Image (cartoon, rainbow, N blue to C red; front, side, top):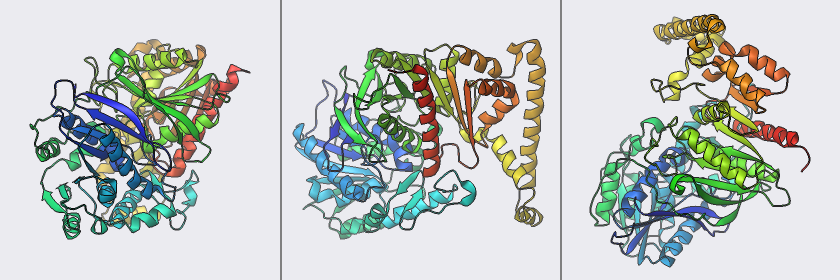
Length: 599
């Protein structure tokens, strides 16, 4: 263990800020200085969160206390990036975090963060009372970061809502991309943010680890030096790999060594195990606000399971509104309990406004949950996931939730489906874009490797388009690759036909599983099924190939609801599509509440 990781809330104007305090384990010499680290937002917040956790764990293992926190409007913190003052609140959060570290006994406090968080830390440096700055791959100006965000937005169709044909533009002055939607006031504040204008404390020392891919242009370091900071630049690889897709992400060992050396403590490496320390008592409660002003919940970090190693966030509505139905949100891939682009946080707080409590769970070895001996670290289909789901369902039922609705996306949808298949006492399941219904060890973990159907529908839809033929005739289309896609699709259809023929004789010979029989059995046990898909998803294709008749019959009888949207990507990155998914989840929960009858 690397010591304890205690949850807390920072009291900041604009709403509570979620934080964790990492203290050294007993017997480890505690250093006089502490470090405050901010998680990022957008891509850095989603993919980079484990890297920040690993830096905190490694420093705590060598005696350095670390307080890491979610920026306002991100992670589990209150608010939204539609709030005009969110940038100022983020800066104020550094002040509150430094004060909290001092209150806990630190003789001096340093602050830092990754990418945009490094820039915000620099601009809050002197006013926070911190002495030194640690910036990993910092961006020099808010304008530069907004340009990156626009580039991310260009990678997907950034519409505001499910009317994909209309291509509704983002309102003037706002910005959207990479799963974020930023209001006019926040955009203006970011455009005026620059390291060069940072107020540096007297004798301010900074450790800067530049971005290694693409190579850093040195602008941020030069700006810090012009502002009066003494900068130590350390070339350390790891930014790209630490922020890669979750399945190939690695521990930023070089960055960890640089940080430990900066503190003058014995240098160590880590194997990547998320061995977060645990306490038997839950964290404090705080009233937090969602993306809409009325979406308010009382939230607290809770622990359960073996050695209290499972961590989740319990969100409760006001007692007068509370129903006997609750939602359990499961990890999507190895993203933390906040969900893809914060979808679970926003959904949980919207449900609270309806009187529905919820639990956002991290499976063992993912997010803030400890990895016990049986778990696999950062594995979306780990062997302990069924156990973790059962544990969380029992925990909720012990707290008065009579009807539990399981909600999952991608591998979380797989977990929800198999929990219901195994007979878990749940009222309903909401499966959003399961890549596969029956995962095997030989299967890939990268979602992109499952997308033959999506590619096939894309190329098929473009057959009648003039510009597609122009690209073909001018040699701008990889004809061999397109042919491979169509060949794979032909094999898939033929295989499905053969499996259906064999399945009529012996269902056990089906290629992966008896989806038709499993769906019928789940509904027959009284568990309602809601399936939510983007139109190009392989899980939808599998449903249509192998269980079309069951889906049709169960839908006609009211036991299954299927919602299909044309346009969104796998994780519903554009803001409007997440609102659509949130609505489908709410309707599934409403059906469960209605079936329960009057309270």
